[in-house]
Image (cartoon, rainbow, N blue to C red; front, top):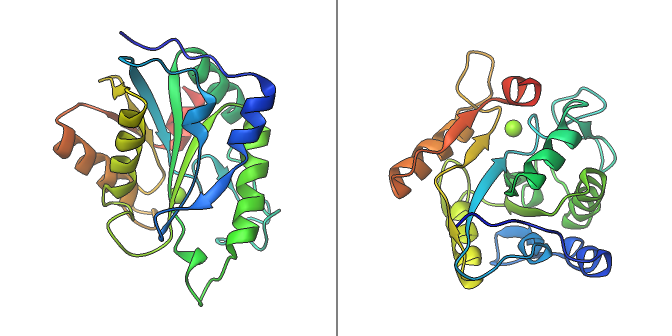
Length: 208
Ligand SMILES: [Mg+2]
């Protein structure tokens, strides 16, 4: 049965949503799933998103964020659409590659990224499970490590993933895209689970 998702009370929600940590060593994450009233035996729909260039983009219009304040929603449609997805029973998830958290070339501190994610989750105001791969390892898209973590986290709550899921990302291998890692992750998830997830690019997803 699909879960009817409700948000826990404000106190619990804020307490959990805003707790971010690094675990295992190369994945920055939060306890977003604990903000949802999930019941053992539920099967939930997932709406998963890339972060940069999908949910948000830089306010400065530069390719990399200048600081933790340099972001804004990808468009005005993002917030209402996330709320609608939450109301339809989707679990909202972010899968993002954040090599900058460990690189010396484009350094972002974990503290700054935490501040930024806290503001993003607060602004969108729905429970969001965040997974950020900090290294070039099995967690980094297009590898499926972050998806496997999500599956394991849900399994611990006695919950499985339904067939009605979607992944939205801007790295889709189109001529101007910087990579095809989002599409690659989606292809790998489909291969691994044999479930027909949908794949969408942000320009199309937010406006339709
Ligand atoms: Mg992106």
